[in-house]
Image 1 (cartoon, protein in one colour):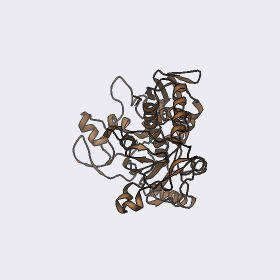
Image 2: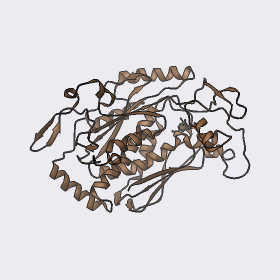
Image 3: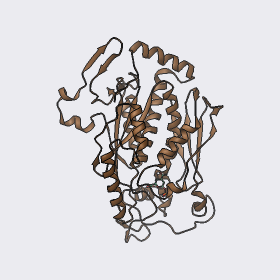
Length: 389
Ligand code: EPS
């Protein structure tokens, strides 16, 4: 099994990720990890923290001379801001600084202090913070390099911010990567992007925050990843859980998703065609590349809806946890909108889940065996690397 865990508080010394179960011989380029970390820091509407951090991954174990060894890979990202928090976040000694006692509606603050019996909301918010996603992106970037070695590539784009919808869809992997690189919001629709930015500025002026929807698209996944055999082996089960685990995500849909409920079967199911060089293929992709919990060879398409960030500069009503009297919710430095960053986190979660199902099918020990098996299998099922989204 591929196991992935992170550790670290938002204002602690560092974030750490451990990936256990990678095969030996994955060629890892550190710059690709750092490039994804930099992408996660981008996005119009991010807060002051991103001006402090310059996230870079250090490798503490599992990689030698640019290749995985098959042992656990440990990655560490130093929090530059730790310098400013050493007293308030000290591991030992007496508490320093005022406790946070005004939980924010929508954050883990209140349920967290109740469950863990804490008196300072900071004991909860430090770990609940989306800062943790930097560690996910670093780990995901290693899994992406494993997937790329067998022709599977992952991109993402923003399709909605604050109710403004993007209408442009990517045609292929290069399209999504190139267009997103040119967009401050990671959105392929320039007109919509302008409106999204205006909405973010307006929310900022009003002390408010905005959510949205991002889409992750996978090109080149061969048919046969995941399984219909048991509920927890279905790829859509794993993906929905992984995407729901991203901070602030409240909804996930695959392919046509909720719109499947509105249309008859004749308009939803993707008719099957065959071409002797191309193998089986579809002309539509409402299934989002997954049928019966198994990839069908078409691009995998998943969208996640992110709620607006709970830290509002014009705070909502709350209750002081020390006195149980009404109070305004805690305000602290935060983002107005982080959907662009969440899309990069979505790519990482996709990579971690796909790496697991790929290794499940093709073996877990070394890349030479895995790539040979993938080549033979692609030949047998005539799986081509898709060009169309
Ligand atoms: C984040 C770091 C955080 C926030 C944001 C995401 O930095 P700080 O709390 O020091 O300003 O910008 O976290 C949240 C939105 C949250 O609710 O905690 C990051 O690295 O992505």
